[in-house]
Image (cartoon, rainbow, N blue to C red; front, side, top):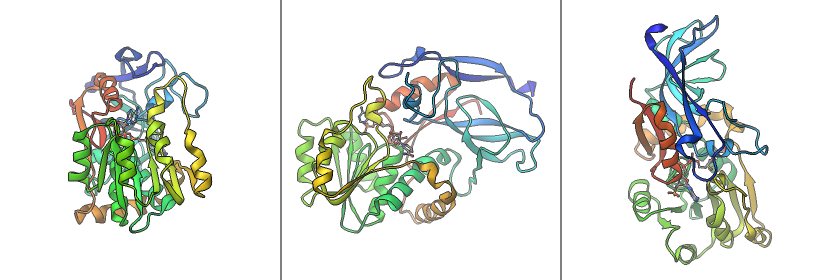
Length: 338
Ligand SMILES: NC(=O)c1ccc[n+]([C@@H]2O[C@H](COP(=O)([O-])OP(=O)(O)OC[C@H]3O[C@@H](n4cnc5c(N)ncnc54)[C@H](OP(=O)(O)O)[C@@H]3O)[C@@H](O)[C@H]2O)c1
């Protein structure tokens, strides 16, 4: 495989504090590995840029998955099989898996999913048609069960998960409110994704806006961000409401993570705070994709993506842009040398 050049791998050089800096990462060049019996070689086409990465590069023992200085940066990638010693995989097939930020990866196939690009373009298998969309689907339909006419609040509404959750809640007949960081993103949520209301949490009166838009209180808080937005919205939870703890992006960059002080409203409103991990639903991914395909084909569901083109070296800057809120939908890094 010498004609492939070198394999660039992105390594964590030190644990970040606050927003990640370019020098928290370094690029290592190694030989493209040779495959053994049962293995396949995958060339990366797209790298998924996931908010959760900031959680696992923290200098902390609190989490199961960790990236330590010297380790390759975790990421879900989608790419093509370019060599195979495994009868389950043919050269030319597309796959995705947690293979890290690098140009080439070896796998025995057990940790991969095949990507049928007739169902969705390859990049979407990392976003709306991948874990982000599946998270929105199962967290909303199985855990929150929105009913027609109910009010659903999605925080981080313009992100990879949020942009799908809001659309799916609309399909369930709910009235959907989203929060995000700018007027431009609010307009996009309403014009492109059909949100009923979008609130810029940087507006000085955003809490009053949320109160005004929730006259019957909020049945479901689909929370991607935690922090002050989630905390304030708890005061508006409806009787028997659900607060779905999907993610806590606002806390991932904080030295000391903060929890919601307004939890007392959950008690008086007989509401529940519900944890969620998508991997519990792995056996049901095909069912979700079948439904999502139908909605995509009939124009009822969009797969929003924000694709940056570059090389492995460009991942740190792209990742920082995610936390600066540049993305509309799933942030992807498309490797330009393919
Ligand atoms: N439970 C699960 O199984 C599961 C699965 C996948 C993802 N997740 C979680 O879901 C959440 C969303 O993930 P994603 O991949 O869809 O990321 P994302 O929302 O596409 O990207 C991060 C977004 O977070 C917002 N943000 C950044 N800093 C913030 C802050 N200080 N306060 C509020 N918002 C901030 C930005 O949007 P604005 O411009 O709107 O601020 C940014 O675009 C993450 O917390 C992730 O860990 C959970």
